[in-house]
Image (cartoon, rainbow, N blue to C red; front, side, top):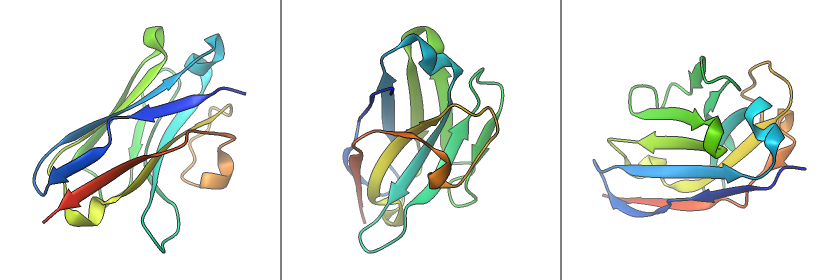
Length: 124
């Protein structure tokens, strides 16, 4: 199991930016397909963004495309979600997740490893 730890959440005004980080231990993290998901109160967990192990391909939910950017630094075992032009509807707990399969997935059940989540609150 690869422990994942998210950081960078907090309160931000609408239109502002937040940078979330997902840090992992272990040499195998660089081989994992990594995704970000979010869950707002009373709602299902939803896909936000994902990135292949080599960082060459990225995937985004339509709701965040053009505003969020996912990247990774395998030398530092870190995946970053840069969030710009934030909206109140982006308010949620954000989770980092990893899967060993190289195939992309937007389904949370496809990910075996999860962080504890970090709260992002966007005020209007």
